[in-house]
Length: 78
Image 1: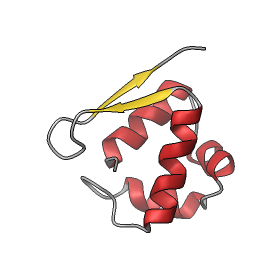
Image 2: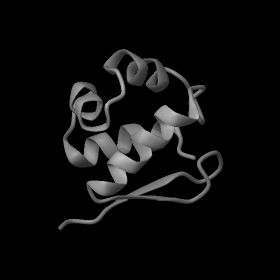
Image 3: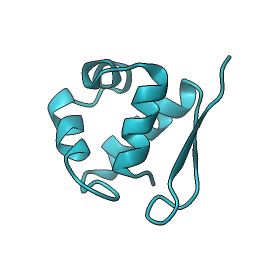
Image 4: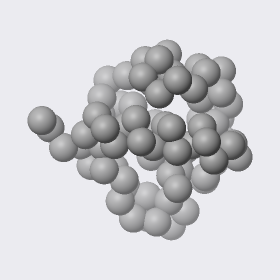
């Protein structure tokens, strides 16, 4: 899975707002905001979290490390 910090870092690397991420991954902006107010792995549906993860990976993000102990994000430029 992925952590809240990884989601925020990935958005920052892509220069995406919450609304940008929401439109790219078809998850509501309010839902993403709720996730980002949490800590660690967001409490949300697996479907939404996988949609966010897949979307970010399709745009060049690689999630590294353990999301709870050593979360990381790498941007692969195309």
